[in-house]
Amino acid sequence: MRLLSLSVVGAAALSLAGCPKPSAPTEDAGTAAISPPDAALAQPGPATFTLRYTLADAGTESIPVVGEEEGRPIVEPTSALELRSSRSLRNYRVRLFDESDRALVSDDTAEESSDGVLYRISLPTPLKSGHGYVLVIDAQTGTSMTDAQGREIADIRMPFQVSGEKEKPPPPPAKKRRSR
Image 1 (tube, rainbow, N blue to C red):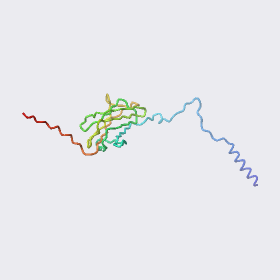
Image 2 (cartoon, rainbow, N blue to C red; image 1 turned 90 degrees about the vertical axis):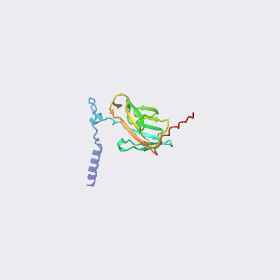
Image 3 (cartoon, one colour; image 1 turned 180 degrees about the horizontal axis):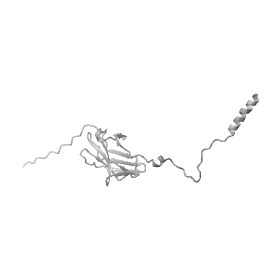
Image 4 (cartoon, rainbow, N blue to C red; image 1 turned 45 degrees about the vertical axis):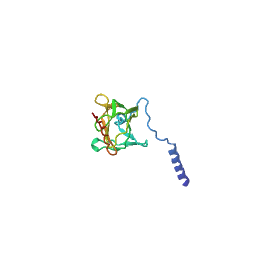
């Protein structure tokens, strides 16, 4: 009896081991692979921007991107800003404005790649303590800038304020009196 039960168990094991594993269905040469409908419609998200500034010790620090109604982030005095976009841009310009809405003079460079734009702003003098500034990204010509896929991007305003006491303007030079 024992021999019979061992042979039954052995035969069952051999029959299971000999069975081929179920195979995955293969594509017929006449049919094309069908991708899920979402994959065809999936596009990269909208462009995002990050703004950094150079610290006195040559390190860099991020400037949070907030709306003007939410207050201005405080930064240390700097003369170098770096703007990065997550997408390539078309028809754009970048300007830095002071509190009087005057564009600041700067030496700018832009590096464009398929990964986005790296825009560097070098100012001849550091930003003034206590003063507010706004970095504006808008259309160079026409009404809108676009990303590499042709999607319109709304104008962007990145306000910030330099830490410290507000610098007072220097007094006007004293006039020399003429004696007669």
